[in-house]
Image (cartoon, rainbow over all chains, first blue to last red; front, top):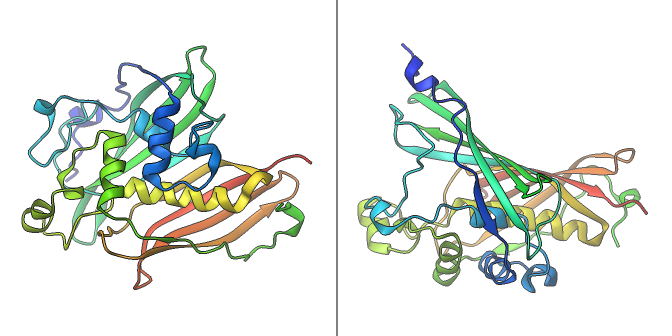
Length: 150
Length: 138
């Protein structure tokens, strides 16, 4: 019997409120240093390194919203019948570089939920698409996150 | 400078070694606002979650893969597509390294596809990825 009920599947297409962030040279530099970048253009903050947007759009939540393991609950997601998160992955398409002064808007959409049979039981996969654009609507990054639950 | 005419399928990328430590994990999680305790609370990571040590964040390994692709291309081209997954974890104290290979190239589209992995000392693939570099018009 499938774990994916019609009620669960009805969450596909649910989208977050667009999140707007201002890109600063300081944040680009912090991220470049933290990730061990070696190219001067990233360390100086002239341009953002390739996964800077992951930090820029990471949820800033209050301490009371963190679970005891320190993780924040992703409000875009429904309650899944499997809860232990396994490996995930990212698929990123770059449209244009991110530079200091950019005002970027990200919208996240729960785009897919599907089930597969793993060697030790059922697995639930879900995908979240994030579209990052400028305020004028110019595409900057398209990203798909895939997560596996067991 | 690297030129697309110089590249052959099967070319190996330079190997880069990564030795993440507590300081890097602190800075990385601070930059993200990530409070997941497996990355900085040794007692929690080992006694409650059962890891052998502090866990290297998966997306940090993903970033290293993009760095390998971008540094290989230099000023000759830019990263237009990245795809990776986190298959196994690593802990602080491990020595990790990259291994990368040119998988395909299209001189017409000026695009090169690279397979790059982060591996541990036992050669287990922790994070495999595929990356597309588009070379600049000369």
